[in-house]
Length: 155
Image (cartoon, rainbow, N blue to C red; front, side, top):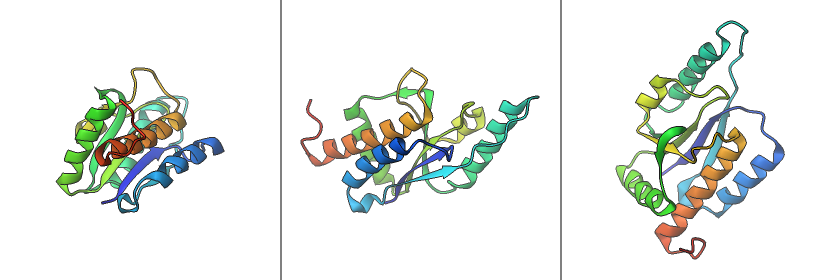
């Protein structure tokens, strides 16, 4: 099974990549975890945010045709770490590859929310996109540790 984060925004500080790589290196090799970035769409003064969201949605959907899509969005469902581990187990049994989607700086379209298989809220706070990548990677590692009985997660 492949598991990846697909995020809009290809200019992140080095510490973001280092932190994500730290958790990625701890995941089992059969997860084939990776992070893919898409460029942020150009914004124009008039209606730029709306057009950019639409362009970014098209790009995200084009890169995730047969994967189980989990959209990270503050309007999504909040999960505890153990609930995420249970969901992750169910998603893995589904047999499709997993893709965690992070939209651009102006958010995502209603179409992307509707076409996601699950909409997950990391927090009700608005997070910087780099931090969302790190939190997602850490929570995936924590979910794996719960699934496998690894002592990383101490309840």
